[in-house]
Length: 374
Image (cartoon, rainbow, N blue to C red; front, side, top):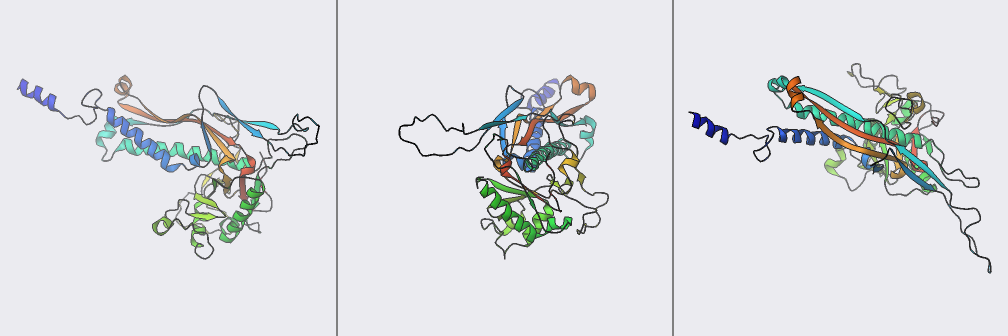
């Protein structure tokens, strides 16, 4: 019997071990890590739409602006020692990493045993969603801030373009934000403004509230809004299949929209809210200024961002994201797991965002006056 038990132990398949050796749960932890990254990557769109840099051995990154210079005719006999106005002028922009951003959960071993679904995978996805949501919100608030700023080049005698704000519609009703006609007009105005400021046509995108996006979807066909490279099922996917004036359009619940994130149920003038939404009326913008805990850049207070912003149109250089720690996973094990009979699963990220080139940012808004700079 002893020999039989020894043989059984030797032949036992442990699917959590790597090459049948070591920690019996090692591969399970790697599965969790993959789930977390999948949750993050599937739910963040800002990471690919703005400038992203990795920071090592420092707390901030410096970005350099160079203003314009001029040409002049040479006078025979004169030495060439550079333009007399000292052009081009140079300025800087520094983006600092905010404090460590985390999302965590404690998983009790007995709950895993009793659960009829993969508890860790479900929690890991939600951790990824939470980090992606905050990542996008900070990035989009940085873009909105840039649309309200003047150029960092302030040398006397030099005029450099700043950000742009464009009114959507002609009434004071928030419902103008959902008008396909008003939105299309604003897009062409934005494209013209970007052209006039010398902003590259490559990488121009817009991010809208889902209801704005689907309003435009319904208007395709007769007005040339549809990107002809995307047809059939792609028309229903809602992932940037519309272009207006060369601007590719995405939808997100993480843009500042009428004082909330992505939606504005309840009290939106001229807009009928869907029924059976319960107590959900949209998530109000939080304060995220430099005075807020953990914030080292200025994303503005709720009142500064305002209640009239209704989308973003920008080019890739509009804002930058500095990452000191990319999305990572940490899980407790060993003695800690024994003492608490469970594991803490942690997703973490260290990043910071701010505007870079204000001229590359356009903020559509509704109402009689544009939101103020902050």
